[in-house]
Image (cartoon, rainbow, N blue to C red; front, side, top):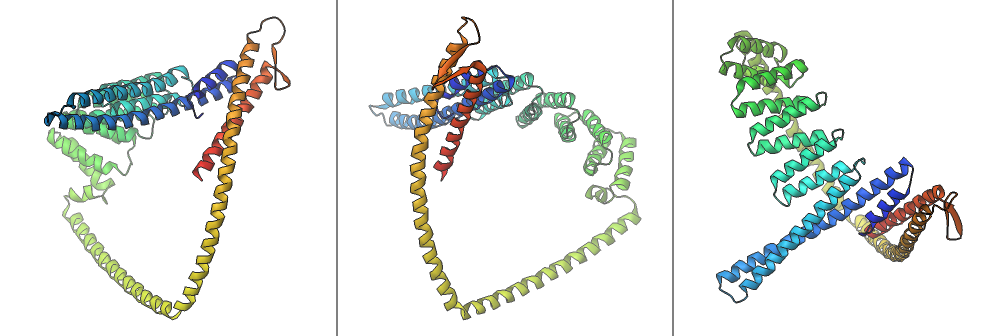
Length: 413
């Protein structure tokens, strides 16, 4: 899975095998390989973008100085821009190819999500970003990515102050995913959108639906406070008074209730509670001060003990220095062994790669042989039927992947 031929190898294996399980396996590997190639193209495009920006700056400076090479610098900058666009196009093409060709895999939706991020953060194409996320939701409605993408779109539009489109996305979320854990938060955000859009009546409806869905939710104190203010603004004083009573009785301990308390006796009780809380805070601060003082005394005692045992500690440090030198030598020996093992693994990986390619070619040739009887072919001194070949091919590829994993592990060492 390390070079540009990997997707083709996995695609050929996907077409050659017959069992559904094997097809799923090779489809996942093919998508993973295509995503890896797209990441490489993206890194190359980012590098070329930096070069293009640097050349553009040099060209502007040359034009201002009326230098003779100003036109040449501008042309080079334009070439880099074109190369950058081509690399971004290749990156997006690989991601969309993976999503379209292997639509049944778990990674296909991730490919479209990655393409959307490239369009937004690298190409600054907001509408293409929106279109890609909408395509993901439409093509993969059962994917775990779809609800998150719907919320992502709503928050994107809210940040751009496109409130109508934001409201549309939040409503679609509530319609398509009514039972999800995030539904409460989405409904709260939708109410905020209505407030920002100037439609307080719609905001009241959303907040009331939020209350009805989970009446005893602790966070509803803030919802009730919002409802009280909105109903007052809409001259719905009866509703506002009802919500105020609910806030004061069910959520009496909250700051929202304390702020809106109207009963003199309860106001006095709250004042007494605040004074007691302030006293507890002062006592806690005093205890922290005593703790800090005790810690300082312990630190002084520790310094005194260290001075007494300084020579002993110095001897221990010398012993540790010798031990460290020994460990350093052992690490160098291990590094040399690792280098030798890595070289051998690279050679074995190249041999396995050639072996897999040759095996797939023999397998495809045997599959096309319709002369009669079950197709077979010979390879490495053995005769394979097609079902046996599928098992052997998977074994080869698993071994090749294990070699690659071990090489990566050794490279990190």
